[in-house]
Amino acid sequence: MELGDNTFAALATRGLVEIVRLGTALGAKEKTFYGLSGLRRFNSNLWKFT
Image (cartoon, rainbow, N blue to C red; front, top):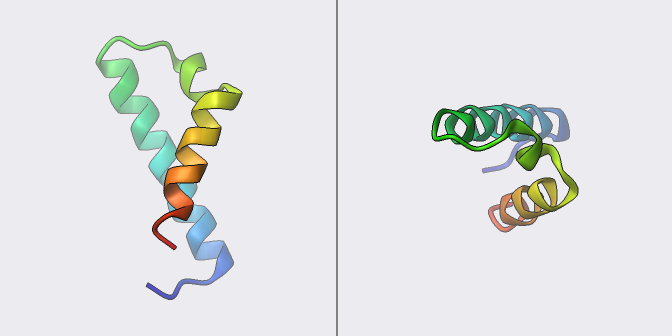
């Protein structure tokens, strides 16, 4: 998909929010996803698809 930078950032942000919701519903702590390793893993996986 050819998206602009703002669209890509909006989708990435929304994706992270949904991942945090799912993880906390399954019993994980919210801080886990916003830590450096959580964001780094999410970011590296996200850039594979661009």
